[in-house]
Length: 85
Image (cartoon, rainbow, N blue to C red; front, side, top):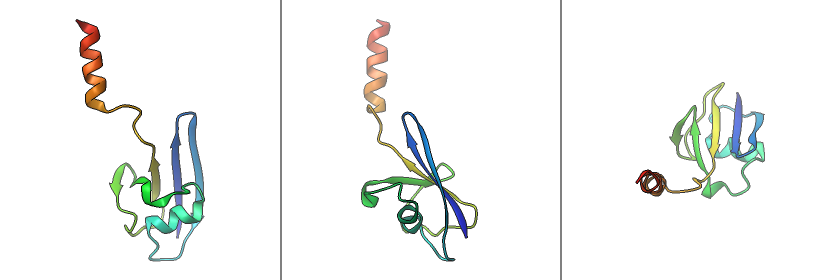
């Protein structure tokens, strides 16, 4: 089966198409793509929905590797509120 692996970066996205056997998991796709050197610490999803590394893939899935947040959303909200006053 053919799947696409996308790694979000601040300057743009890295994309790799990989061919995997039936029954492959997200972990297999990440390993085959070479885009995620440290698999255990990666937050991943399929079409925007977060999934575990052992989640089985289907033909045409888009595996997304998410980057860490630059700032906690609650802290960002506090800073914006503070600026308004």
